[in-house]
Amino acid sequence: MENRKLRIAISQGDINSIGYEILFKIFEEELMLELCTPVIYGSTRVEAFWRKRLEQKPEEHKKWVPVNDVSEVRDGRVNIINCGSREWMVDPGKATADSGQAAAEALFCATQDVMNGFCDVLVTAPINKAAMPKEVFPYKGHTDYLQEVAAEKPGESLMILCSGNTRVALATTHLPLNEVAGAITPELILQKLRLMEHSLIRDFGIVKPQIALLALNPHAGDKGLIGEQEQRIIKPAMEQAKALNIFVHGPFAADGFWGSPNTLDSFDGILAMYHDQGLAPFKTLYMDRGVNFTAGLSIVRTSPDHGTAYDIAGKGIASEVSMREAIYTAIDIYRNRRTYYEANRNPLRKLYFNRGKDDEKIDLTAEDDND
Picture 1: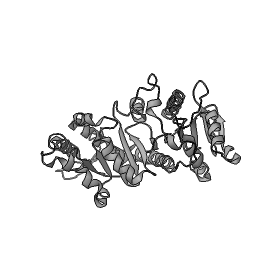
Picture 2: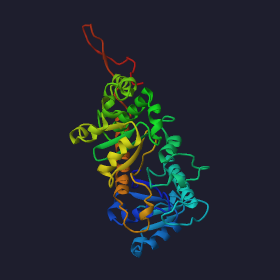
Picture 3: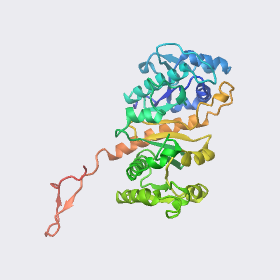
Picture 4: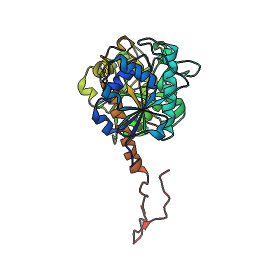
């Protein structure tokens, strides 16, 4: 690690989308290759198609070099690894079987290399879930797949959307709205609060984070007049969290919370009950620069907070800002984790005094309490 730059594994995403366009724009900047070494898991044929379609300058093509595997990766270049058993057909702006299969195979290869330590972090370009082949990718998205293969604890992960000091996590993710209330339990909320606190400490370097919890119902249930989940489920979960020394506040009515900048700035993290409650206001505020981070994994994974943008694929107008921020955030989290592990690798042994004696000597035989 000391002898090379951080390697960023980037899965190509949907080949009919804006993925390659935003990667071209990002790595036009020389400073990016000084910061890290990108490894694109994709297709040189697809790259060449988009380079021609977008009329890329010939000198930019020289930065991109094909490699057979990570053993050939070079610093100072955009390395691209061919993934898959065949050549893919590109059909800009459309969901096709090829676009889904190519996205799945690139994701599998990139994830495996990060988990094996050949690359340091994973950044995923957007996919179209409807195009993904169900027989090889039976998941609702990146998060569900990564939870299965890379969760630190089986079945546990947390989607966090972040931009600057705003970090929004979701208690439930891709659920139909009519299933949300039935899915929320005290156990689920407590699990997500624990994941969020641990991530804020380890991944974002916040010593004792303050977390805001949003209510499920309008006006936080209005003492049971509009809904009873706040009294029956959310508040008991909060009490359990406080007993674990998690600093959680709420439950806050979502409309008033998002409408008050002072309230928003008072917390290190926000836990929303469902997808649109957290992400609709977040994307309104930070759409061009938000980052999706998956907490609770053994690896660092980020992605831009937008989708495939089929409607503008090939037009040369896609913004690369969110993808660039995803790379920056992945690097920051990787470094924060390394600092966290170094600081906690060998905690100091507790020392106990033999009180009540004339000579209060240090007792070095006392049992450790670091389990």
